[in-house]
Image (cartoon, rainbow, N blue to C red; front, side, top):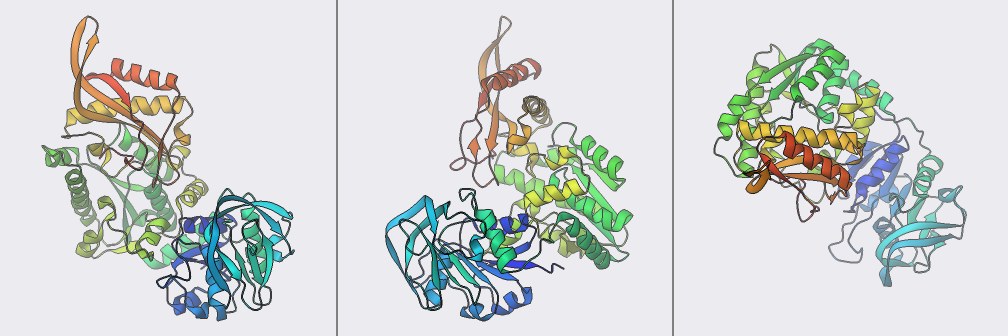
Length: 512
């Protein structure tokens, strides 16, 4: 499917995904495999280049992760980054030892030899280092090409074999010319062409879906979020009316959510959508439940039951389309071991077995930012593409304690005010998430001349790149003031608003 491909072997660096993303931003397709993947799989991938990622180990330790030595005989250009450089030195006859001084952060790289990797790069350039080992002796047939104060061999190369190794991280933003260096590897050394675009992805993927589905039917659960919407629109583009989308109102959605989804998908794309109002059913099941994990399980299991009932009404259904993204795929095959628990609402394994459905995951090769680009190319409205993440269990995990219709209505009103004011202040797309949480705490207040004893709303807003870590957002005081004022005045049952100033870790983004 992709002619031009570069493979990234993962040795446990926290930046491995960034390497793959930088390659793709340069319009070359790339995938990540664990370092210990069998050689046959690498050969079958037919890479035009292989990148060895960084990692936390030292090559001279007995348990250090090392690749199959035969990768050096494939006749494919190699680029070793940080730990990847030390692997090359160690396995090809050089020597790696602990540096007297760790080199961490900004360093000035001084280029001693003009090589293809440094085409159009000035003699001195800023790079980002993160290592405690250094190359004491480079391998036979290699030459040094650059140094820093602390690393006499910060870059080495074997021109004949097209092996290049660098001690710094070109993939991080702190190496200003890093992308240019990576492009030099892709285009000057591996001879790749920039052919990987979302337009080419749409063409090849719709073709693939058509061939796979034939004249059978496909179901797809949609939530209104970017992943499920893009999945649905892409599959619909391939097979039209053979697709039925199922939208389940579980009673813990935000205000006007189902109406919005209906407008966007049915009116905009003329899709078959089955809207199921199961809110009473979900709320009945949640009655009296206060444990967060139980809430998640109940909502996840009930969703699958409702979905299954609806899907069974459609004749000839053979496929289930799902918006799995590449990071989920990497997580489950990464050498760090399968991820411990994939969140409950993603887990449709039982459904596939019972209904004998086959899975279609058209986005499984894409990162989140690529899904947004794809959405734009598919003409999906911006309000969906830029939508902040919303958890599967919805407002149920933003209501601390028991979930009732009355408490959902209070939170919906407060949440809408947060949403409106964050948008009005032009902050919505700058934040990872911003929302309201209903606390099971009552406090004394005064309204008019009366004492009140009512609920507390916590406002949460965070900045994050991927949801793995997050900082609380420094919202302007006047915006917080307006939010607080409006919630207390407009939402019956609330007399106090607090702002959550905890970061992740140690706190999570959601309260439950």
